[in-house]
Image (tube, rainbow, N blue to C red; front, side, top):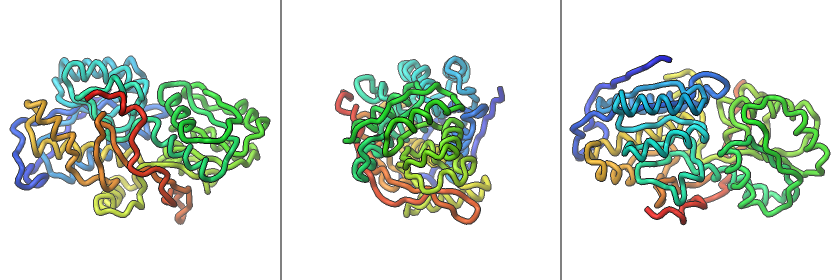
Length: 380
């Protein structure tokens, strides 16, 4: 595996005028998926994170980047190496919830701060919340809860739902059902990494469903949506942004047009930070940013905001600075709840085509200032 160390030069005064300068450089260990079927997600999160550091001009952050290969055992080995040999201060980058569950509890118990760019398993949001764990994306259920709310308000009454059988998949269907008031035509858990969905599509066809909700991130969603479009089933589809995000849509193509999905971010959100992010990301990487890129970008800017206010050697002060979330988010207003998970709006998007590019546009808001269901069990 390749080890990349990136130091980015300039002054922290550019980050936070009038605040205390950090005395100690913060060393960040980024463990993310850079190879295999889920590589696009990790690459986008990494690129968004590194873009924010570049634009800030800060020399206060050193980043060590490693590929977890989407394997929990590899992620654990890398985390151990980063904590024990690299002596990182902060860990980040994990995309998949099963990997997060393998790494995060041990890392925060060793007094390392973990900033999640994506995975938000329910097990880390409630009674097992931790002062060192901050999720900058969502709690896993959130976008699915918004999809359930949308399905209800749209009038769907007999939805077929499916997701992969791993922590984020179970959180997905739990979240959808929490806000969906209709009947279920079927509920199926698929194999993680599955690419053939003929059996599931046959079940949908025979179920009498009036709609379909699915959560199949990365290559799984590409495979399902193409096969579904070819099947002629033709029921309306609702999903979370994970299955209809920018990095996936070009591979899915016209089969995704008109599909409604839910997200806490969109490239057309009208705020200055997001406008800058979208333009700079396109200029730097030659592609439109994805949801994952926006989360990486926000995570880096959250970190930079804390560095501008407190030294990493003072953990209490640094955690307090993170909790303030005093940065310009691509989402506009950003705040943490009591369990260090975002309280945020979740939007409804529709897949459209702009020239030769398939993308999303925001068409409404599903949930406002949404708090995850597990926060009440967090005693922080």
